[in-house]
Length: 115
Image (cartoon, rainbow, N blue to C red; front, side):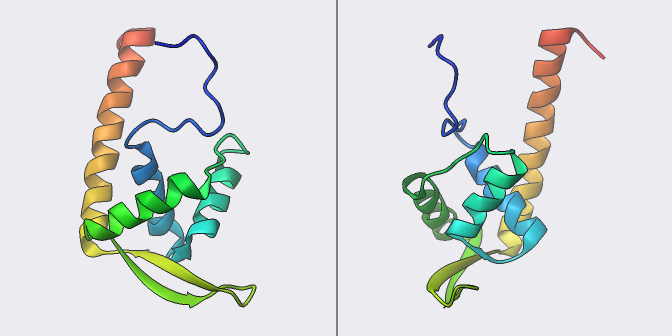
């Protein structure tokens, strides 16, 4: 385990999928840049995803049937792939949120004692 402070781009394995699914559930279909911008906004700049991290995750989620991608035009009149949550994606999001809450409760108990 490293003693270094995590960088802004360090994202725990698996949390990126959860954040992407939640973002699309909240805001509807978005292109990759808009997803990255939203995560940066919500985290007050703590999360700055590069496209080399985000796009493979979007492709993986689409291949798993959790997202549906379609080409469209951005607000800036540029061609981009927009991603939307599928029904399977909504089910997976619910499972991942439940698992996250369970793990957060365990960590909370370990760090601060039982509630």
